[in-house]
Length: 480
Image (cartoon, rainbow, N blue to C red; front, side):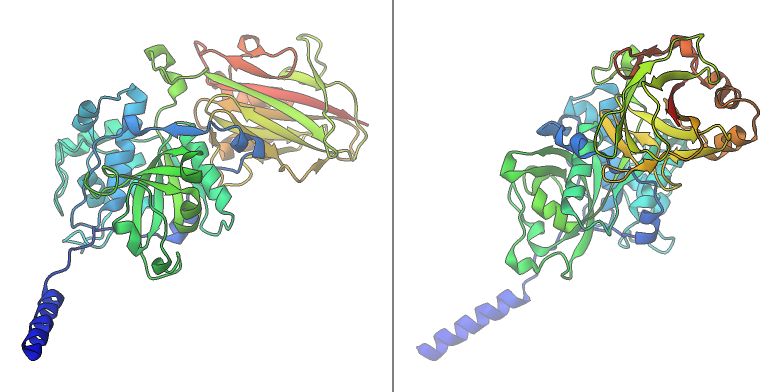
């Protein structure tokens, strides 16, 4: 009796061992550190900017039905093309009806086909998301109805022609791979979401992530983020600082039956540990949609500026009256008093609405220096309600020994400016900085008379003017 029972047990175990195990969902992220590092990055903002973010944000109402990449390694194409581009379209046109969002959803097949390796005929090799963003910016993307989800099928002429209507304006990296502070990864992602932008997440996928509940937390058996794990792209569409101690709402491409209807909550702790990188794409400025009745649109352009000495003491300024300017006609504000040469200080600039931000400094010698963007890698596009400290919240700059007046010029623009071309024109031009700026920007520069400069602080607000897209904000700093 006992031998026959043992034989039956071993037979059953053998059958179970030979039975096919359920397949893991496909992934497909090819994370290329060099191309990621070469992508324009968003600068770190002040601590107060992150602390003032709302406690929760959700873009889930703009999401289409969660897609399913099936057996193909197309996660990046789904995250960027099908999910992100559809959310951006929904935001731009204020569409929250899921049936309508599904009808206009964009084609992951197109995006993958345009970036995959030529020999990847079975769509298993995966793709670099940076190439996906490049394609979305240069070529655009057609709707999924125009190019359905298939593998290794070239886009039709109709798909290529339709794609250009849905290009993005730009994209940027939120943090780099060598960022060791998990709070920076969390805060930069929260800020992008608070600005109204979904975030493509490059993620390390441990074993427990394939079958999570509503919330995913790492297990001891996952062996941490340094274990032998896959790489996967998903879309972050919200956050809640109070749920599970703080968590991101993430949209996956493994179908509606996965996790919480195709979505999952990833706590901030796990996000900081398992995220490789994050990128956001920019569609048209919502501020430009105000005339079309978009409920998310803000003031067209607005900004403010503060100065402080090294010890934190505020440096007051007053509104410069027109017609009383000796040198620089674009000067809007002057320091209330003169400071000793060598004074150490910093400034903070706040973009009240989304814009492209540039800054230049000059003195009586005529030398002109670009100080924003910090370097060629920094994206000049700044989200609304963002404050940037220069040189930083812990560092200061020093007034030189050349007594007289220095000038700080900030340009708030609704459209990008070619900084190399502008700086070359400013340096080659004749006359004051104001004269050079007016000559270099021409009709793009909004006349000083049209700008509503504040009386009690350094700042301005502006409704969309009939012409021009660049607002100058110039301050005179006197020292002796």
